Every structure is written in structure tokens, then in C-alpha cells.
Image (cartoon, rainbow, N blue to C red; front, side, top):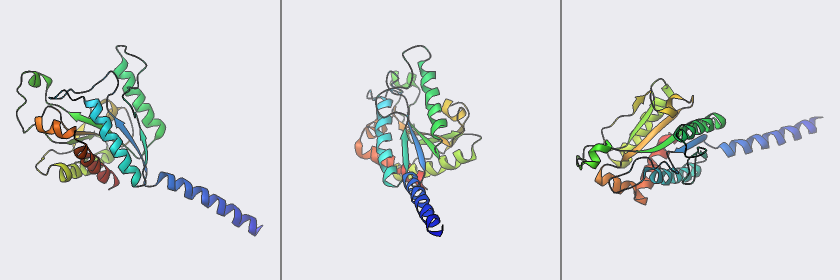
Length: 221
């Protein structure tokens, strides 16, 4: 009986160790905003937000996995999550992203996006104000864990990308995924596509790696 008990404990321990190794430092869901027929913001040089979001998300995934984090993605290709091109396709897409959050139940969700100054200003060529730039992280106002994550990420983004960026992590009650999920979820606006210099940087592979590095290190913290 003693030998049987030892054997059972050894096998159980091995299974638990394997599960822990798979989870590593936790479980993260990376949400790459927009995709497919939804390009997101269109930048000053005609950059599509959906493409930059996915490129940064893939780089972030690799960096988190190197640190033992189990990573899921809402999308890994240029697609949206809706059933078609109907008038409610955007709502369908957002609902399915929220469904993935509820199904996976990750430790946190990192929703990757790009910001833009009002489109009217871009079309009127009045986007020259270089003050309108900088990464910023949003969280659901009533989420203490979301606020904590957002503030840590904001700190890392400033330190890695631009120490002159004075933007602060900001609470929000209107973004769909923030208000429709119970998860610790933040929206990371990596920069402004309406800013000439920042738009160029956000399409640069080295800079995208820096963005991913900042988000990764903040998430690990």
C-alpha cells in the first residue's frame, strides 16, 4: 500500500508539474484590435491600424512566451471575428472577443490599438501639432486590478519609448471590451498614427519590438 501511495503521488505530482510548466508565469490573452474589413484608424501615410496592431501583438506573444507565459490571441491573421459584412458586424466581432475572454479566463487581457487625432484634422492638414503623440493605456474605471496593470504598463512604455511622454493611464467606462468583461483588461494605445514621426516609427520593426518589450516587461511585473 505504501509503495502504491508513493507511485500515485509521484504520477500526480508529475501531472501538476507539467500543468504548471505549461502555464508558466500565467495566462495572457492578446487582443489585436480590428482586422479583416475593419481597418481601424488610417494613418497620415495611409497606415492601417489593423496591420500594426497585429504586428505588435505577434512580437509581444513571442516575448511573453520566452518568459514562460501561456499566450492566446483573439486573431493571428487579417480577419475579424464577425459572421459577415452586415451592419452589425462590428458588434459581432466585439462580442466574440468578449466570449473568448470569458472562455479562456486569462490572468489579464492586453488589447493592442493605435490612436489618432480627430480624422477631420487629418483631412484638413492640421495634424502638424507634434504634441499630439505618445502611448497611453486605458482601463475600466471600476477595476482596481485594471488600474494597477495600466499604470505599470504606462510606466514601462514611457521608460522604453519616450521619457517626454507625460500621458497617464486613464480610466474609461465606454470602451466595449472594458465594460463588457470581468477580466483584468487594458487597452494599449501604442501611439498616434496622425503624428508624422510616430506613424513612421510604429511601422518600423525595431520600434515595434521596443513597444512589445515595454508591454511584456510591464505585464511580467
